[in-house]
Image (cartoon, rainbow, N blue to C red; front, side, top):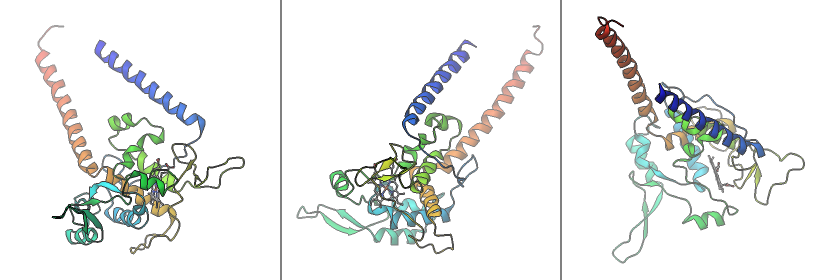
Length: 280
Ligand code: HEC
């Protein structure tokens, strides 16, 4: 009992602390988050391979010129639970990239076509080069972005981890950011090379020009070619990129929960049986 109270007390203090911190941050400006229905939400949710393939197309044709994806290897694109490319498709995709390799026998670096084991290369030689082309802002690597921004719905990230096991807040944020560009309201000035956005987490202006608009990317499966659809697809793809084992984790979590419930019943009835003949 004492232990339980202590635990509950600690949880309450932590919760209030985190909520208060969240409020303090939100006080200076609003971060507008538009929640979406994701196929991978909920304990039984799964990624939709067709959506991931479309999102990957958006990434490659638009985002990849500024954002790398260092931790995602081409061969991951054929892993179960992901976009479901065949191994031949993966080989063909990898071969379209030029990868720096070396040094060769003369000590020189050289370029060669990508292989399935390579990761998605960063588009700039280094951070300085990236900043120099981007108004001194850094286009983050995409490998973990969907998780790095999962606190942004205002719901404390660690509570999301503990109680729900799934983190749609990251993709909700990316979707909102991509569709959140507006003309600045009267009286609001944004800096040179900055764009007003109602969803950007660190202030209402950022140095990324609106990367998408209706008709920018061609879809071959009849899916509408709209800003909203592109944004949803690329956000789902980035969720997969950050959490490729999400499906497995959910399944494990579910099995563990079922086991715990069954175990609790077993314990309860054993206890009753064992203590049945003892006078209270
Ligand atoms: C022309 C370069 C460029 C392109 C193309 C581009 N971005 Fe960016 N992106 C940036 C820069 C620069 C930043 C950093 C902005 C800042 O911090 O002010 C950024 C930041 C971001 C962030 C992080 C926002 C945050 O909370 O810190 C996300 C998410 C993002 N981009 C998504 C995308 C997606 C998705 C695409 C493709 C549809 C894309 N970007 C295309 C340059 C680009």
